[in-house]
Length: 205
Length: 176
Image (cartoon, rainbow over the protein chains, first blue to last red):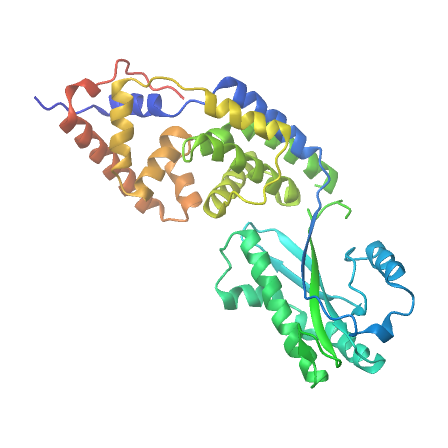
């Protein structure tokens, strides 16, 4: 014979069916909350892409010695060394966006090139300061249809997109630029992007 | 409210609600993932401490809103794992209890409902939200939540009644 539960019986059954949290897990969850609240609020990470270039490339630029250059580069943002003969263009390109968890992510993206003149370096530096980068990160996520993607996917795709845009922009000021391959002429060797996710209050890098 | 005050408030709320948020995940994903998701949720809450609403009820809704977004976007890679986090996973995965037949039948019936109706049932009956709060959390009209909730209960009742008389619960009082 079919029987139907009353409202009260169904309420009781639903309450009993809720998976029960083991008491030790509940206590550990509170400890985890305390541990999280004890942290400083910044997280930083890097993305880097470069190619190996031939020894002849950029040899004329290795004036101070690779070791010294590397040590210097490691001591300043983005805290990543460079192959001999490759220069990193400063200032960095500012790339900012809000990820799918609502966190504001702030990145600095650096072009890395070989065999460029001082004038070309200055032109590339001007690209970094262009107003085109204002809002570029959020627009790019929108254009890629990635506003709801997981944060690490968003960051990876932002990096790919910024490298493509760097290559495009650099090619406009250096028409004979080659991308990521050996050449005696100007070479776009790669890029480094350092990102930080601030907590918006009193964090430090 | 200044930043230090908001920090303290966020820390207090995180402590107060961490077991409930863990339970929220425990009811929706497997035990190992629940620890991951709680970890991520607490990090997001802490990073957004400045945005914690002043009102406690709104703060609760805000935290569950974050939990929902974390659940929707979670991935298991690139995760920071502390010793406490590992312990929590172990505690969640090692405990196993034999569920009574009627509870198993209820869970099986629940699994037959559309996902949105399952979520409404879980939010109301397991997480303790009112139907108005559920509507806000799910970004749905209140009337829709009310009607779906009512239909979901009718469907559960029908499924359980059609299955067996053995599903009649042994106690009738509603507990939290």
